[in-house]
Image 1 (cartoon, rainbow, N blue to C red):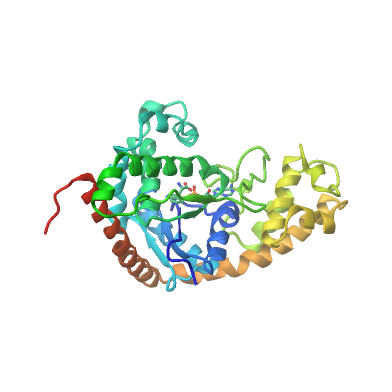
Image 2 (cartoon, rainbow, N blue to C red; image 1 turned 90 degrees about the vertical axis):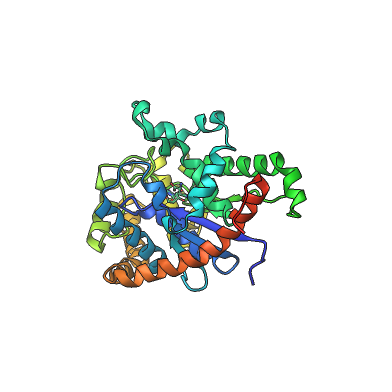
Length: 346
Ligand code: AMP
Ligand code: TRP
């Protein structure tokens, strides 16, 4: 049984185009952790609106991400699946963390710099403060482990800094209320395996992303077998055959990426893949990769389709999940109010 003290939390933004990077870097790992931990998996819609979202598209996308969790094998009965906006404590705790985190800390966040681009003055305040909301997501449940892709590492470090500063700043009040000294645990990132950073199929130096204009750069979780085959066959490669050993993948970003994808899908590692395919031409290896990708993704794609066709069912799952999540988060938030010195309704 899961250790009562340990809890997993992770989130995925409902911003369209769920792709193979999201699956291998995050959702597949969510499924694997269910045997070892109590898990909360959240569709982070409050994060999505840090940049413009079309309302009808957002609603469709929230249900699609929930469907992807369930179709991939997340158990919404044993664990908790919900969308963030249904649990008000996320936004409430995020405000507290806006007052704990320092401007200097947020100024270092590379994702904000990338997303805001040159026109920083015109980025939303929410986009800037987003890592504080992410810390609130995790710490509202006092989660100890957070499975994410490599790109979230810096945000996780910020969440740890916030937890630590809160514990230190309010140590006296925490003790006075008879609460554990480490009121917030320092959440540990779980970033491991061969696909923590899946790269674009068109450019091995760029990560596979939802927002890249070229659809050929990514495999979407809604792509059918033909689309998957076409995209993998057209994927950029170099002219050499696959190396025999992993050292040979150095300075060959496209080869490294395809081998990493294969390894993750096959529950293997790059050395294992090269033991089988080292020396092959890409034409051959790509065909094996097409077969494997289609075999692994098509059952998930089909189940997602079935689930999104019944939005009522998804909405009920999310609603029940939100109720259970709120029961945990409201307890944390009550303690936080006591710690801060707020007067509470009696
Ligand atoms: P997002 O789409 O930004 O909400 O990301 C959802 C999850 O997928 C996060 O844990 C990300 O770190 C992960 N992720 C996004 N893109 C990739 C990628 N190209 N490779 C691996 N993981 C990714
Ligand atoms: N920021 C994450 C992303 O863009 C999504 C996210 C929001 C998240 N809150 C989280 C991930 C809490 C892990 C834990 O991918």
